[in-house]
Length: 320
Ligand SMILES: [Zn+2]
Image (cartoon, rainbow, N blue to C red; front, side, top):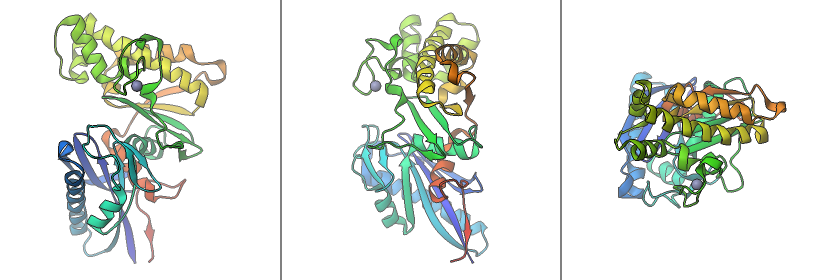
């Protein structure tokens, strides 16, 4: 008997994480820095190397069992899951646009590969094994360096015609009016509610430089009003955007992950307050829930590309 095993990898702008996903849990987790400035070949080589390491360690532990490997990838950039190609990507990964991601990795590793956008993978992971497990429709919001999202509807990921569905950060909100957004537009919620936007708002008002939203959350918890206001402004703006989305999409639950989800009540309270105030009566009571799987979520979601449409994340046993 051959056992099918999925190794999953999450390719971000700063690090590449890989692990073996079995029954919705991640084992043999390995992480390396992304050689993001060195271009496509270097990034692909690094992915292949960390995947090989996970495979070797898993094989060493499986005492001679006949393993049939598959690879699931969640990657930064707009990914076409049908062709496994990077349709577009920002400069944070040099030369990534146009990469035949699944083809190149299959060539390097000799195993079948599927790929999806990293935030889409995150949404799949929380839907299958995390805060939205047991639901058929959920919206995952990743609020951190940027603000991204993924919508699961009728148990399936919505990718959209150009695979770019879920760009929640680029919804216009009143509070961001006139502010430049990293996408090149103006007035989008990411311009006021992302982690970097919170940090720069705090820096402008206080003159102090704080390195991360995690550190700033400590400053806010210690009672500094300027830090509290920076989080409040971001939370309110995101609440406005999510309330509007809830009215349009009516999911069973909205799951919030990313670095800002750890920022405490100075962010969560205004987020919930504005969100609830925006809801039409038909969707009132819709819950905002904190994500549960952290950085394992994209791995579990990427592995699930090898599961059935309604099935579980992880491996299947099959007789070949
Ligand atoms: Zn934008």
